Image (cartoon, rainbow, N blue to C red; front, side):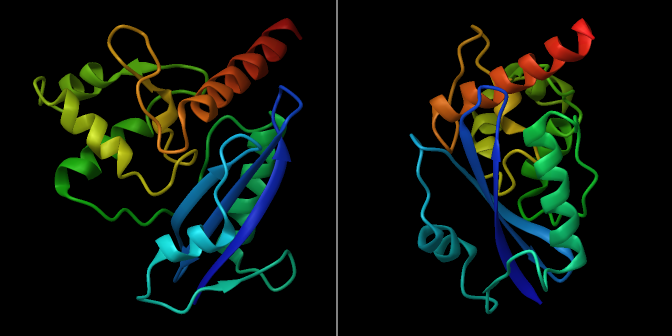
Length: 183
């Protein structure tokens, strides 16, 4: 089975956020973020999924267990009730990319680290640019939180969905943590 869905929500800033999410044979396969300033069309998302499978769009009814669980967890993230994801992921990449993505999963909600810190942690201290390239190949943004990686200077660096989208996700996480700490 190869299917995808669209999840709409609102972040802490009160503005709309959308995530397209696909699963293949019970594991998450791909995702793409969108908001009003950083558009990704449904057609573009499906084109990026590739032709190795027949992709079917599902609404909330008839959705697979894996996609339903992922949709619920993403909605919880959007609303500030979820700080991490516990989902079946299909990693597809080089051994180096897999090491980078596994390290990204260790970055806590609301925290950031630099490309150079990731490179050092995986034992390749001179591979900062390669870490950035691996981030750019991440097919599951948000779930594998590449938005939490910054340049060594503290600047945002790059993000497949656009720097504005990266800033919104980081601001959302800070706002959620601020509300939790104030409570």
